[in-house]
Amino acid sequence: MKNATIIDVRTVEEFEIEHAHGSINIPYVEVPERLAEIKLLSKPIIICCETGNESEQVAAYLNYNGIECTNGGCWYELENTKKEEMRTLDENFWNERYENNETGWDLGAPSPPISAYIDTLENKELKILIPGCGNAHEAEYLLERGFANVTLVDISKEAVMRQQQRFQGKAIQIIHADFFAHNGQYDLMLEQTFFCAINPSLRENYVKHTAEILKPNGKLVGLLFNCEFGKEGPPFGGEKSEYERLFSPYFNIQQMEPAANSVKPRLGNELFIELTKK
Image (cartoon, rainbow, N blue to C red):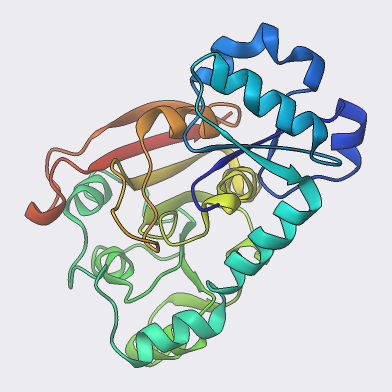
């Protein structure tokens, strides 16, 4: 289920009423004419419908045409499975990671591509959001350079308490909240290992919510992994074509290229992104 593309082959009307989180709609009757589009979708591909009958037929048809996929059956059973997966990434999960110092993603310093981008910013009054702030190295870098409107949001109470102690008395706002429930208006959002930490089924919501909380012409800047990991996430990987498909409806892609100045262990596996809200 994780990292899968779910195609719901019910009618548009049925899909709009309710559907599995993160699924896309390609109605049964449109499948033959949309084969080229389906071939470009991220793998693995799971087909679903109302009863499992039409999805079984579509899965057989796609496999016959060289598109490997599986029949996922009823859409609502897939939805229940996805909800169960997402529960593993709740607040308790992340609190335990911090309490046990299981923070292998942490570099111990700001990521070089992001700090290099920060160095190009002249307006110190930009409203900047960092979701999933973790140990907040990029936030510290911003404060050291005089940025006055920095907000951190993290679902982990443990992470938030640590940063509140660390930045006590500093001009920074640190919020214990779910990013997807956070409201505000920002000029810039910095992405550093938050996107890869959330369940891939939430990625479409991530893109939409980011667009909602950015001001007109606001920017999303940071790093995305350009690789797949050989184990269950988090972290969850991905690749450029998937990201282009996700972000392009809401953002103009100014940069989405391999980062030349990543730390050595991640060199060649990160994309630097600079996206402007449409």
